[in-house]
Image (cartoon, rainbow, N blue to C red):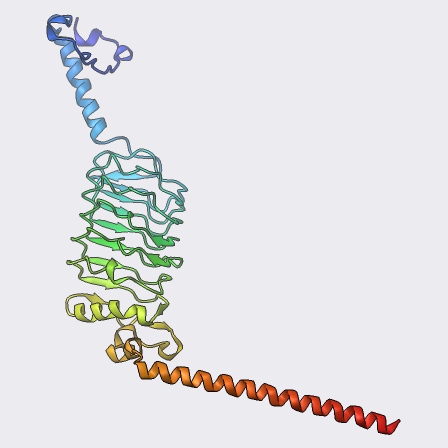
Length: 318
């Protein structure tokens, strides 16, 4: 048989059947020597399968070139289901995507860049980046994220850049949100809804070079002192948007640049009361109580006298 005589429509891809548990090679049937023409067909088909596995057909509405998949600005409401397996750069920016299904990135081991900016994401599924160990750049800006949980970047230890800016509903960052991201150099948390950020969330980032936190409604109370002290010590090594970071409260520091606050600004946070202070407060409270009782007594007597005088005046008139 020569290859030209094999109808194209009759060619089918079949999965190899592996030996069952307990079988020995001696028990397996011998298929006989392969026919040269069929061997050639098998090789050609195998090559096609390998190419298909390495580069699954490009999703509809997307463009694929050199391991870059661009699905941006396509008004997508959901992520494309099948991507080329060797995708390195995936852009889903400027769409209307509200959710990402769990395990979506499991098969894309080569992924380096993921752009999800300007969508409608409110949260990401736990463990989304478990298998994205080579992911270096992640853009989640201009979404509706409300919090950054502890397991959000789990196992994504290769991350170098994270952009969480312009998430107006972002109110909370878990103290362990960035745990293990020792290679992280750039972190953007600007223009969100953060009033407080735990020191624990940042002190485990030894490679941090750029930190953007401006445009948030920071409440510069006593709880912010540890973070600001840490930032002042890192300011030479870490570039921050100090001009945009301002306090929104309490009233006495409203509008003040975040990085202008010194230890003197938090002096009241370290005031401690002595025994004499407590005794004085107790004495003042006792005096105020006595004065209150006396005042009420006098008011009662006055009211009683007025009532009697008024009654007597009415009887005289009669």
